[in-house]
Amino acid sequence: MLRIIFLGTGGSLPTRNRNPSSLMINREGELILFDCGEGTQQQMMRAKTGIMNMSSIFITHFHADHFLGIPGLIQTMSFMGRKKHLMIYGPEGTLEFTDLFKAFGYFNLKYEIEGVQLKPGDIVKGKDYVIHALNTEHSIPSLGYALVENPRPGRFNREKAIKMGISPGPLFAKLQKGNSVEVDGKIIKSEDVMGSMRPGRIVVYSGDTRPCESVLEASRDADLLIHDCSFANEMTDWAKESKHSTAGEVGVLAKEAGVRRLVLTHISSRYAADAEPILNDSKKIFENVSVAEDLMEIEVPYRPE
Image 1: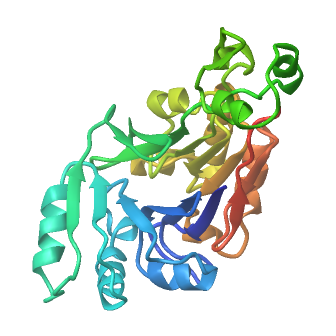
Image 2: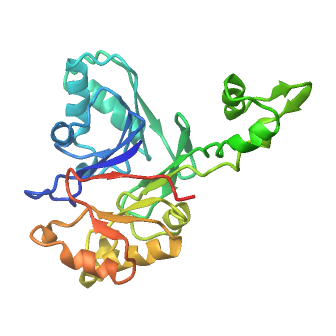
Image 3: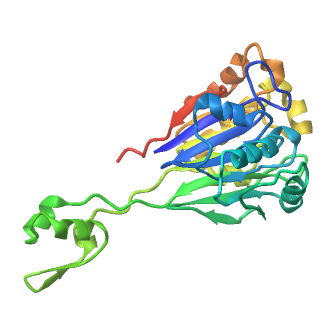
């Protein structure tokens, strides 16, 4: 399972329908949070994501709409009896930020919190996946992130195995796990009956940024790109000045990268009543695109074989 839950999809100012930025990935039951704007824990309750299985928080940058929900969230987990270590990753300033909120407010936490400062190119290893820190172009130090699953074993060729003299049963299981087996004095290797390795899934989250080369390269052949799209094309000049992206620019990037699906987020409050201009500007260039909505969920499938 690889499920994306959009907890907050608004820009710098929240609206009635959009909370500040926050995105959760549920991968095989492990919860990974990307950004944590004000009110994120309430959004988690509304979405029924759970809270205690959260392993880590990845912050893209330290503008308030991307991190103000953290103090309340960590306090709630303490009240609920959390004991498990919590990792907080982010760009320049992460160590100071983590130390500050642990010292401020008399939290009396019952679990350990560790801040880790990342730079572009750093990799965080998880269980059967890695998360790459990406350089992004915003008005302050910032990062994007790419979750890349490890390759999966190829399909087991049952017919070939039987022809090689292997009877269905425990030997099949050993071969599928990558082990060699011996049959009638002959060693049969796992690769003799397994197909080629199959790619895992790739999800890229840009954070706030101008379209940039590092996000483009990380997104090549990605299953899902979630990109800052604060403005429709009519606001190109302001997007450049404020270091955000327009719908058309993101459409061009997604098309060049060859992503399978594009979701636009960080929608400016000026589109609170109608985000159609953003969707239309992007759809002219890249067909498989949608505008994120709060509490929207996406299941990321494996690629067709």
